Amino acid sequence: MEPGIFLDKIEAGSFSPYMGVPCSVFTPLLNYLNKSGRESYACTSEGEAMGLAGGFALAGRLPVVYMQNDGYGNAVNPLSSLQLLYKLPALLLISWRGFPGKKDAAQHMLMGETIEDFLKIFKIPYKVLNEEDGNLDKAISEAKNHCSKNGTPYAFIIKKGYFSKSDEKAEVVKSDLKIRINFLDVLKSFLKSTDVLMGTTGFTGRELYSYLEHPGKFYMTGSMGCLSSVGLGVALENKDKRVFLLDGDGAVLMKMGGLVTVGSYSPENIIHICFDNNTYESTGDQPTLSKGINLAEIAKASGYRETLEIDSPVKFKAVLETIDDTEKPVFILVRIKSGTMEGLPRPEDTPEEMKNKFGDFLKGS
Ligand SMILES: Cc1ncc(C[n+]2csc(CCOP(=O)(O)OP(=O)(O)O)c2C)c(N)n1
Image (cartoon, rainbow, N blue to C red; front, side, top):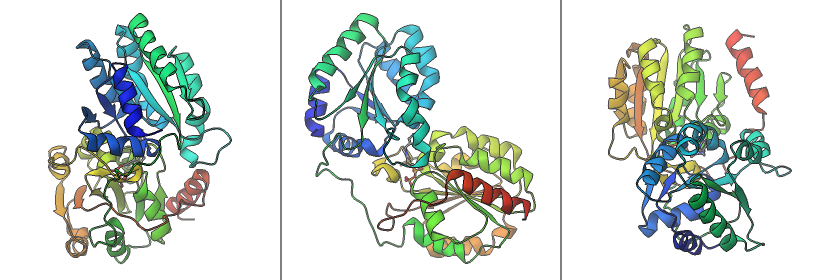
């Protein structure tokens, strides 16, 4: 399906504007949308997108919310106590990662199996869109009828490959000093064998896994935005270890309250590094809302004892040389560009194996 045709048809059904958090299934659609100048809003979490959609619906619009099926979890609370309670319509575009029987990353499998059940439990009618059926026109008219009759959301579930790749690709800058792996290279040389290294979902965690040989590493595949909280729990229980948290701007924004919790309990062993490329790089480089805001200042106001901002591996090296004397928790904002290694692998270990290895490391066995 051509992204432009899809959007034209949706808008002919009176649905707009667009808002949400990206998924790679929507990369061609979102990259087209972002360049097309149509009314759209990047949101920090799917729950927040439902709130925004609720506001537009109150004002008489028929908003469209796009989300990964993993993000449906974030949307559930406003869906139950805003959209379904007040009867506020929306068209939900939900990706179908973890489609039963198809190989996909481990974190998608449970939501892949259950997304239809979730919608059924919430009595949200839906259509699975298939390019082969050519059922889009029918689905849009059903969605429109449902929204005007019942006033509640209708969902399209969309599988990988539904959208044809457009030429409207976000620009990805590779082989540049300002990409994450060059900072990981610097970090490598400062690590002690007792250090804990934890990485957020997406490319950051995958790079940590494939690029840094270190016994105490943990890749949080999924649970986007929870790194600061998971890291806080680990840090509070392991005060003798330095805990490096490798985060992304999209993930920090998704659960920004986590900064306040870390700042409030202020363990003296957290080194929170946020790689800020102003995009959701892992899902195709759609812009986040970090451009124009300063996450280091937010961390400072949230109670981190020290915050630093750097934009080159050389400056990162200087920061790490004195890191043991720096007050903690420290938040290091690393301004980078998007770009990762070709064919970045996914970890071969299962999540349970990762958990067991990490647990053994923490126990010292
Ligand atoms: C709740 C939820 N919503 C959406 C996604 C899809 N997703 C995976 S990685 C990612 C981008 C993360 O962005 P950021 O933290 O800035 O890191 P970057 O990809 O730029 O390295 C997104 C949106 C997800 N995994 N979970």
